[in-house]
Image (tube, rainbow, N blue to C red):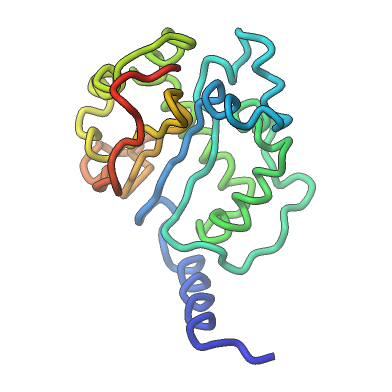
Length: 213
């Protein structure tokens, strides 16, 4: 079977990234879901059953969508039993709908990490955001209507330099996802200062001025 030159170079680039790039460095997007908004348009998903309890973790906290390096779809073996860390389903309820397998194939395969380490880093990042000023604001206002300016203001205490690097994404009037555009996510975990943490986000916020949480 012949493989096109373009495809061959993409695979070689991915392999090189796995070998020589530090896992935390480069262009990354941390995508966190707000389940009440996501499930308003995806009620058929098994993960959305958690919202029957308004005090559940997913009802009041950001959950994991993914951690995305710039490259995609690098060569990788499928996930095996034991690859997913304990506790992942709580913070990534989409595991029940095959999200972990999808994220590993498309994004984790190019992360430079083994599956367990990749998902553990995602869990640590989500935990850090949920404990931040933004995470506390969302939890305190779950189910309420807020302004887009208030969401940006909630970033300031902990992520003052991140206003141009965070994008709020809505479906209709409801918040569905928040994306953090990062150069070096180790700063999120307190391993260094915030210098060099952020990169300029693509596009603009996809929410109106009034947002339902």
